[in-house]
Amino acid sequence: QVQLVESGGGLVQAGGSLRLSCAASGRTFSTYAMGWFRQAPGKEREFVATIIWSGGNTYYADSAKGRFTISRDNGKNTVYLQMNSLKPEDTAVYYCNCHTRGEGDHDYWGQGTQVTVSS
Image: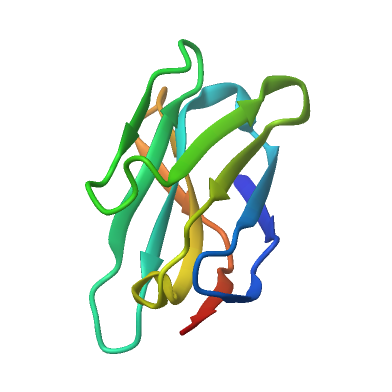
C-alpha cells in the first residue's frame, strides 16, 4: 500500500501561482510514476502532469504545458506541481496519483486538494 498526502491548494487570483506537494509513504519502492489529475465540478477527472520516478521524464496535458511544472524529490518521496499563470478554468480538486509496478500495476490516490482561481 502507498499513502499519499497532498498540500498546497488554496484560493488565488487569476495570473497567480500555487505549488502543490504530495508526499508518499508505505511501499514506495515500487513507484513507477507519480502525477496529478484534477476534477472540476460536473466534469470527469482529467490528467494534468506526470513524472517517471526513475528517469525523471515528464509529460503534461496540453492545458498545463508552459504554465505548470512537475518535479520530484526522490529522497523525500515527494512530487510537486508548480502552477503559474493560473486561470479560472484551472479551478478544480487536484488529486495526486502514484502508479506502482511489480506484483501487478496499482494506482493510489490522495484525498485531493482544492484549487480555486478567481477572475
